[in-house]
Length: 311
Image (cartoon, rainbow, N blue to C red; front, side):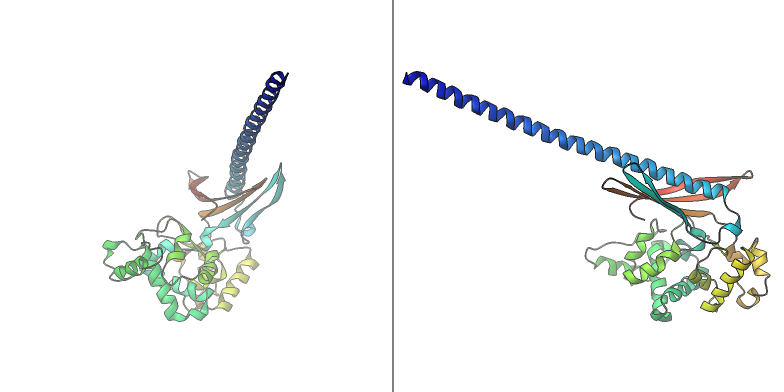
């Protein structure tokens, strides 16, 4: 009898162990399934966010192609209002980059003074000496080592001593965020400059007189004051924008400023799109650089580069 009970007890314990083992295995499988399902949902949400961002990009391309009457385009950026979508929301901004100073144009001697004026316009407390130092350091960042620019070695030595150390590329900037690494650049000055500068292909860059920001207008002539820039903005608003460069350069207002027609334009070629997509717990920001050109009488818009979550 005792032997019978012993066998029953052993069988019961074995059964309980097997049940426990099965429950553990099933629990582990269910956990793995939940993790895999969550990962799949995140991948699907990420893919969906990219598709919505592409939709915002197409909205911007449509504006660039079909809505560029100067009279309607004095106010920037263009805004795609916050729009509710399934499980999230999207919004977009379209910036005119022709109204900003192209940092890569600092390779041209004639742009040195313009950038100094821009720096002073956003932060007058730096003084002329401070603006000159920032300008010199920014030029050195993009100057080729074979250019014979004697100060390059001094800047390179400074960057090598930072923690962590880094090097200047000595080529045209590829990203506006490179400006943060330039010697003498502070977060405060960077944020002040950010709405007024861009990184664009090439060194030749004309400022759109119809959309230029106030500090950028001040950079067009070292004698152009804050009040003078306000006068230009008021005049272009009153006229609904200058239809041609000649209309501005021949205006009596420009007799005082003498802004050269070769430095400005009334049309824009480069634009920046920012697409914000929120889906579930994911937030994706996609930046796109668009270039507009006229080919055989037709407006063509090309995507030059794209980045995610950072400029």
